[in-house]
Length: 195
Figure 1 (cartoon, rainbow, N blue to C red):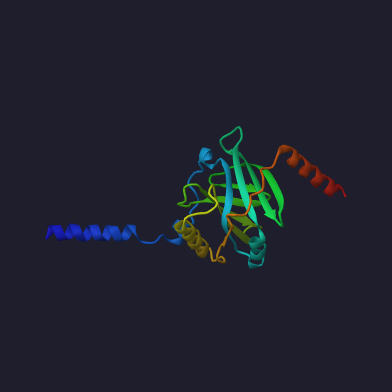
Figure 2 (cartoon, rainbow, N blue to C red; figure 1 turned 90 degrees about the vertical axis):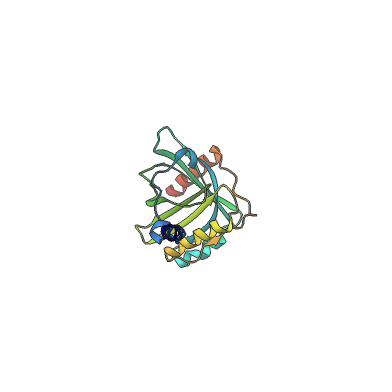
């Protein structure tokens, strides 16, 4: 009789461990950002937006990437991003300060969200104080395993967003921006503001 009780208990434990995660569990922010692990460049693999009119523009994006590098302190890091539209690369570079699992740039609150993908960074962008949400999955690999994309799709569904756009891994990423490119882009912005 006691053997049957033990077997029944083991079966119940197995069932509870295989139960699907709740949306709250799937969308939890990282407890802490591991800066050494975060550093480096990752390509956008999949994304979704809460604002359907912008989904078409997302589909037109050829490639995108983010690059994190540490600065002098443990909470201050550099965040660079690149996007290719119509074979033209656009860059942005920011010095950011981590506040737990989040940072702010251009009045956009960005949160590192949990993912089971080991080399991925999952970022949730809160745009215009919650009016729009962007959900981007970046990876060191250009193409992920099916279960990794399925997890991201389930997370997107939890947010009631349109099905994700999966990027074409054969399209070329923008080259890394050189410091002279960044300086020229800053000068162009300054000249455009004085016109």
